Amino acid sequence: MRINEKQLELVDRQIKRILASGNYYSEVYKKAGITGVSSPEEFEKIPFTDKADLRNAYPLGIQAVPDEDVVRIHSSSGTTGKPVIIPYTAKDVDDWATMFARCYEIAGITAKDRIQITPGYGLWTAGIGFQAGCEKLGAMAIPMGPGNTDKQLQMMIDLESTVICATSSYALLLAEEINKRGLKDKIKLKKGVIGSERWSDAKRRYIANELGIELYDIYGLTEIYGPGIGINCQDQTGMHIFDDYLYTEIIDPVTGEVLPDGEEGEIVITTLVKEGAPLIRFRTHDLSRIIPGECSCGRHYPRLDTIVGRSDDMFKVHGVNMFPSQVEEILGLVDGVSSEYKIDIAHDESKNRDIIMVTAEAEGRVDFDETAEEIKKIFKSRLNVTPKVTIVSINTLPRSEKKTRRVFDHRGD
Image (cartoon, rainbow, N blue to C red; front, side, top):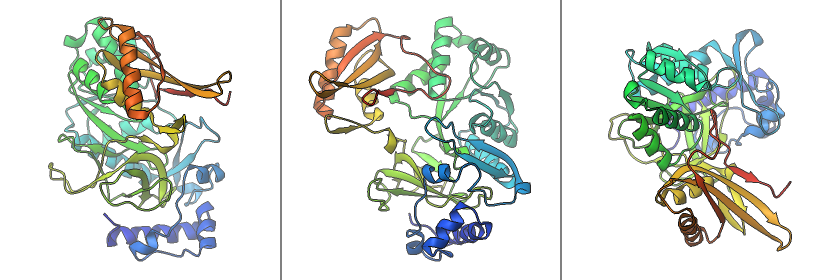
């Protein structure tokens, strides 16, 4: 699915805007001799950009409009290095709300719904994005933000919320609390819109079953508006990405080669109409594939498959490259094991070798020692690595209201 003529025109306009702005990327493009783009071949020669560039341009070096046109800024968490700051114009904010409202509509959510929003507000793009889309749709927003689970459940019951918006980690925590407190018959939830982190099929099944709801994956990242740039439809055949606002490529994360539809690689996104901080060929580090063909739902937006992980989430043990998603798949094959886990990687000085330790939760009805042995065998057969496995009771591992960190590499400690 190569870039089409309309999208090329929009990218050409973006390049000319960037060059005129004198921002960080104007210097990059001037040095590379880029003055515009008129063909797919020219487009694919434009250099990639990534988060490191945005940090180099900190705080507002990528701003492509005058200060008086900026109405808001958002920022990434900045957990590693400088945070990334993204300026938005009024049009950017409105475009984002339009895309988000479209996401809700694709999920079958209407103005009659009551949408409980649990992601965080503030510099992070999450909560305010969910709310702006809700208001654009005309639904009732219940802007809870994260935490205070007692209050969350009280509002959910008293206001008869029909939609829950959350990270998968917090949706799991709420599902467990509702189960523990016997509140399932008191809630009116029908749908869940879940974003910001990858989640396993086991976690998805648990949340859907415990809450009795349909679940929808919403996609987005701070650098590209925020959540709400794509969502899966009721046919559950991948996430529709809005190609009137964004152009999406899949590349080989090592060589940078553009891959054909259907092949798995790294998602690269170009903003076609963003004003405050336009980005061309931004490497997301998210791994997926473009699903070929049209969706059975009849919508013509291109589709991304489930995000399988991030290229920068990969860790190596005994020369084997692994992703958290592979661990999740293995745990999902073992009876009685929950979706929650923790991976610790360390170096055994006495044996001069790396060790990987997996801590997983299991139901009390299964034998923990036998379960640990089964996990080890599947690890060995699938990844040719044998971990140390510890099984603990359900609810032992910490739950999070935001994204849950699962991999702890102690080798550099």
